[in-house]
Image (cartoon, rainbow, N blue to C red; front, side):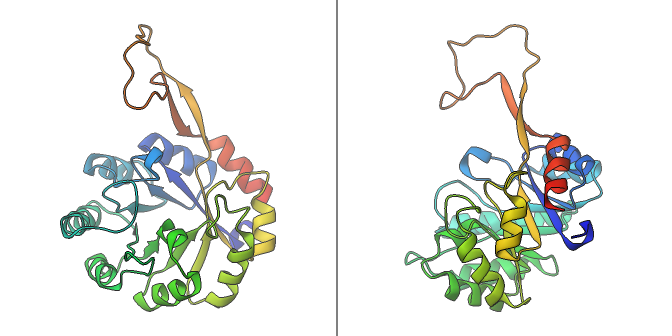
Length: 247
């Protein structure tokens, strides 16, 4: 298999991660804030700085909060505003998804978001993994005109979800791209590719980077007890190694 047979997208949580993704040979980044929540909309400043810093594909996630994918009218309005900001700041694509209470695709909300996206390609994100019927969801997402679906095959990791992933690739019949993500790494990417038949892959390739702070106060923590003195950042070496393991 040749490198040109595949597309690699890195889930980037910062401009620094975007640069590392580019340097490691990625084709595209999905720019996110709020990684512990599964990815939320990045700030306008982050989008602009990322666009100025890298010339690979820049997809921006549009997700107003963590948790489920059932959105209020106010949250949808916020998403529409964020789509316009991302477009104005030079995003190459957008990433979003919305569900109904019964786990069906929310066609009304998605149609509004797709209309706002205009000509930008849209990835339906891992809201898909919470859809009640993956095959019915696949058909509706195709009808909406999305370019791809990011999915772990409705399992905890893409490696565990290869059975559904392979069926989705087959049923998609090149009408939409099925992109495995979640837990993809150098040790399993080739297996996932072989079993599923997928040709685009999404992973983070992050490792902790120690803080440069000399003074530290461990008694005052920020948030839910995570280490305040290290930051997970995409590693260009891990990106490169994972791509090499695929070929």
